[in-house]
Image (cartoon, rainbow, N blue to C red):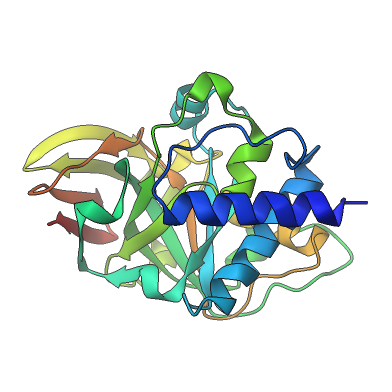
Length: 265
């Protein structure tokens, strides 16, 4: 069972350090979650703190570390999830202020919007069973703040408690007739100021974009939560995170799923 004093302390520490744009570092020993269950409990407490602070309700979730390149970059071979708040969801061509980030970076992904709930059921979800809940797929840019973390000191518990570094997303146009596409085979690329800086395929996210979706559905149910109709799910980057600075224009392209653009002021 999670220690509530430790859970609340971890959530408060992360909340304050994110607000102050401080470097992400290992938590003090007396509040550091002892395992992933405590880390997710701390993440839930952080979600509640942000809602109480008037920073917006949940709009969906991200799944981190679903590709080999991202797992190798961070040094963790296990997916994690993080919340996305409604005010952080931008459409088609979004803008952010570089001053709002300590260490702004971006990722290129395939996102989905759910048309149905995915509640608890007798058998775990898999790629096929989650497909029926997907209303639309789209190219997407995830906005993250790496907060100058030392990856050698990173643990899965710290990443989870932090919310997996998510600070929003830009969604491309929703494609509702995605069933005619081989999502795993779709090529995608990241461009910064017109230059291609990374390329990948939908299959780079655990073999198919719906594999992270199924993983997330099962993980949320295990935690007493669930994916709901209307939720956005970011299924994981198909290229490594890339830094951005003021004046940059970044584009995520996925063939068949359109473009999502981010401008940095």
